[in-house]
Length: 390
Image (cartoon, rainbow, N blue to C red; front, side, top):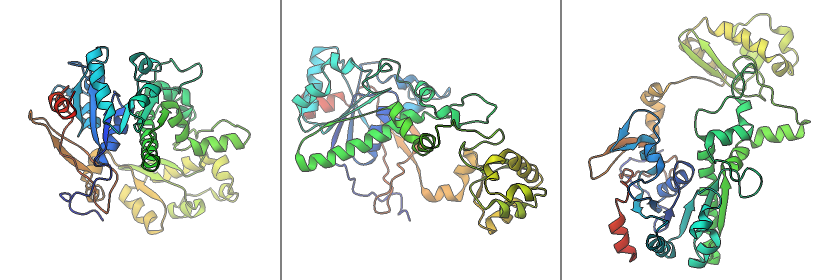
């Protein structure tokens, strides 16, 4: 059970300094996770311009001159403005790296080398530094120089053929999952390298890419594909929710909303719903997949006749795995969400105030909370220069 929100756990990465040269989503998502764990994250941005995601708008809402997505993914960080094409500023960054524990970059392949910030040169500056790098498609092969953007990585990953119904073409995920999962993977690798550094005293290079993270995300279904004759995934033509799972798996319309049905005892479900004419179909368990569209259509016709509350009262009492499909407002108003205490308000000295999420991780039953909003471009430049002797 979560303790009161004003309690704060000991931050496990307290005392570690991360120099974040990345922008957009994947690298900053990694440094956000490290920040939530207690690390100090110093974001290096171009003077005046800053991280390009400051102007990557998901809607027409901006706060303090920056996009909501920038605020969401850069809360709690500090910003120093440095022009990496300027030899004086590059020298200042070198001084920062000598005193840091982690560096993160997601430049296009070749850019870090041109700037003199590739792993070998940074390691020579600080042998104990853990160097984290995210690319679009790895560092070798014909795709290396292609744009490492989330939708394009999804397109090359095969994942789009798992979404939507069989009659549809490839359907992208409605989230930047390649960016997010690459950020998660890099944070895991960095944490492992920090553990090893605690033993050996040496840093190391940690790399991943959007494509590798998306491949890993599909490990279950790709393993099936690789070991069942490499048959293509077969999406249901009706209410598809998983290309490899049998009926009733999917989302169904009820009289006043939508109901999700997961894996369950199909004959028992049909009995509880009083779906007629399915006896021969369910006599063979394999028909749950072979004839899943027919079964799902029969279930759908029945569920449309009753309300969500009506069906939940019947199905949950019999331990059938199901859920109402919530929209965001219903989620936010729900007691289950409120019990998690996953929202916080962060602020900045110029009056910026933004409500956003908190880390999904608890320590000793306590969810860490931050209070600082994302920084202005170079907001902490003077303070950092003085502190680090730049």
